[in-house]
Image (cartoon, rainbow over all chains, first blue to last red; front, side):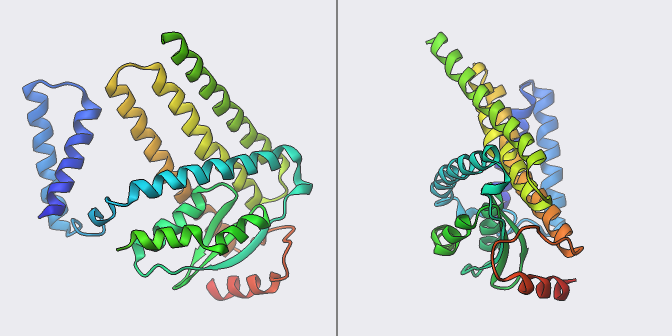
Length: 156
Length: 116
């Protein structure tokens, strides 16, 4: 039930912010389309923990704040190496261990790795992510496990 | 106040444009597919964040700001997904990264053949 309510709030906010017209006709059309979508989503059985990860919402903002700072740091490094030229880079391919148990945790971790410039997650197995990095030091800091630890603490 | 906002937003736009330009230069300068993808990552993340933040400051309309935030969230979700799919497709079709600096070269070959 709480997942349906969360879906309703998300869709309503999306409609209101995108339309910007608040006449009765437009609002009732919006309500009708939201009701239709909730009906279809329930029928497809996709309104659950996976599509509405409510349990993340307490800690996710702190994590995003930390991630933005990491992204800014990584961007400065990559831009520096772009202008210094290709002799200064050291491309590396390596497998990184993951400690997340749930699929959601692994997706957040792999997505964070790819979102940070300089490292791209290429492949993911049960407990390993294959990462390509522009500079070898970036991989060392990943192996050190700061990001891994933070994502794991998001899970529960 | 008005002047200050204009100056700060102009600075954001300028830095964003420089980052996007750097991404483009990186695509030309870097040696192979995977390293070029890292250069695109700069345009993808901080470049677009800076430009969209600069644009948000220019507007006083809340609806416009909300729409720009939605664009930002979409870019931050779609960007890594497409880069990952590109990299995975390239890797599974046997494209080996150039100029690897570590010793585990043959390990990667094994894993790529076992995955395909």
